[in-house]
Length: 337
Image 1: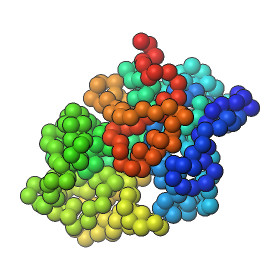
Image 2: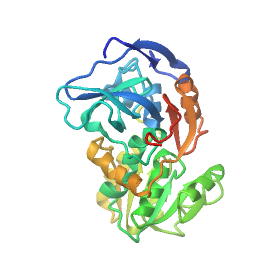
Image 3: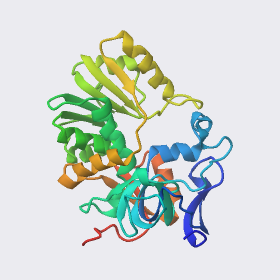
Image 4: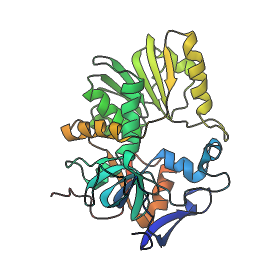
């Protein structure tokens, strides 16, 4: 299919959402172990925002392009139908409905490694599946693989109304935890609706004063000092820092993550962070929670491919809750409806 035209969002330089432009380009070629996905929906996430802005500068040094984005078409989260497969692909065939992480998802067609795709749960719409992988697997790994969550434990989720947070609340409940979700005033109803046992408005309450302590704290993109987070942990509790928001222009919030890891061996509490593993095995675990109904992607605002820049601007302004989706094809209804 390479050589045929498609609409795609292009970014020629680092910057704000104004750098994004809709253009017609050739469809990408498929490598031996790759899948060409006919994109129905694509998710907007904080990682894509960092790749768009090139901030912190650590993003550029990590191999994504020093002076301009190495990948001209942004977008990671994807859901759609398989249009073609490479010669080495064994898990998918044309026509299969899939979700996962692609290269250049803000387009009508995107290429993904076979190992970064999973079969879409039939219960989920393409819009829901399109915002599932990036934030969902991050939340799942934060709670289980890193946080070692056990049934009956108390969990504090800071940033519970965001992309990762809405998954973390639902997953923690499904795993048998008592969940406290932290969000701003306007987003408390969302956190309540997805099952949090307790809701905290961070604009009105000091939820880290130590009056209540938690077995596990998942701090998503927060800017809280380690000493305050430790004060709200049980003596042997675990802190998992997700994301690198805040901090300076060079390293962003990574400095706080490094301080946590260095501090952890000297205290009884476990202070840690991680890089999400992008593999179909984790996506398939996540899909089981969707199939059971324990997790329903909290789709917030919907934008067309033409309005991708507006979607990214809304994310940058903090004007979103749940997961924002770019609807590329269809209405988002179930394929079997």
